[in-house]
Length: 520
Image 1 (cartoon, rainbow, N blue to C red):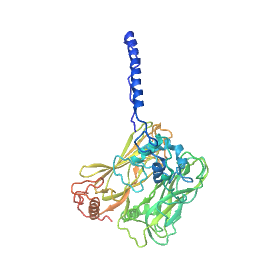
Image 2: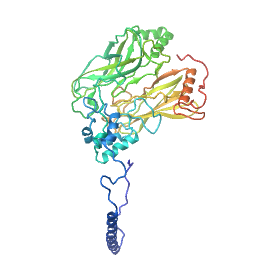
Image 3: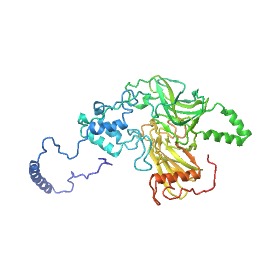
Image 4: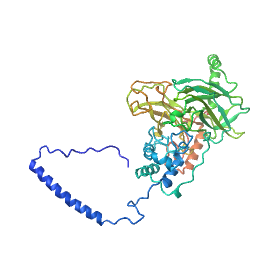
């Protein structure tokens, strides 16, 4: 049961204004009445039949660890909560989990707040609800955990216990065994030192042929003792985030691009468009899950290319650390050719004005889509004061709908890839509105000192507000085909509506502007 607050009871103890004799009479009457009520109550209790042997007084079946809780932990928790992994305690067995029963109840019942476990912050009561890799708990799961904890955390019948999961070592990859792993230069981090930002160099990929990437995953690898006691996941990592890119061997230098912009602006724009057209590589952040690109929009990793690690954010964790970032690539088969182009669909603002010691501060940013877009991922990016982000679509018809809302934890950043059948199909002219929410009060534990004003900056105590969405551009014809296929897959009839696809169910996938354009 969830309670939203405490009730207020009137003070029944005051006798002010009451005649003393009346008070004595009320007291005597109350004693007589209580004796009568107790006599009746005892009689009722004696008359009630006792449960038969082996029965419980409750008609509800008992929630036990072996039958109900272990399957939940296996599905959503044990990947991290096991020995030699990133979580501070193991939850593999009843003996492991029993001491943490009350804490598990509390953390799993936190909704989309930054401290919820498992760390999946999508709000359940608004927007699209189908995402790839969703590890969140259902309301039924959360209720079972609460009931189990409140009833004394019983073990249950050992025969009900599911078989234990088999885990690979810490090198397990979510995308499967990568076809190529490129490691960044190593970084030595002192036990106690100020945060540091900057480039750390480049590393050749070693490719001798062009390959197209369908998925990428990033892992920090360091010399931390995974079995050492620690209270937080933050003590496990030294790389808070890393911006990197793939650079072709014939790519112009920054100086050459600056000169080209002055001497031949048209050629400069063509080169920039070509580089953007090769796709956007995601940013590594603490807690980030794997990235999967649209199957028709693989990103090219060229022969002879290098990975340039242009901006690292490094912080100390209390002990000397040697660390690096491993980037794993999963390739499409040889001979694959993309038919669409992966594009960054970022929406954010540089104008951020966050006041000290104030909750529920809002910052908005807008972007007009110049072409038809299919979004593939929702990825909030804020800093320590950020606690929530929402993405809205404002259509040319005047309709406004919320596509996604998620809580935010700067110590555990998540990307939310849409399931294929719900990925937003947005016609050109749609306005994307991103709203970031900030809290600089003591309630936000990520904020070290929330008394001061803060604005845009790289440091975690500074602010950012951007949705790092990705997607693909669609021509008018491709967009109409996508809408028709979505309507068919969802069995939509004329007049039916589905979130994130304003043309679905209309029987017409045509966009409002019919002029042709080269969108490839």
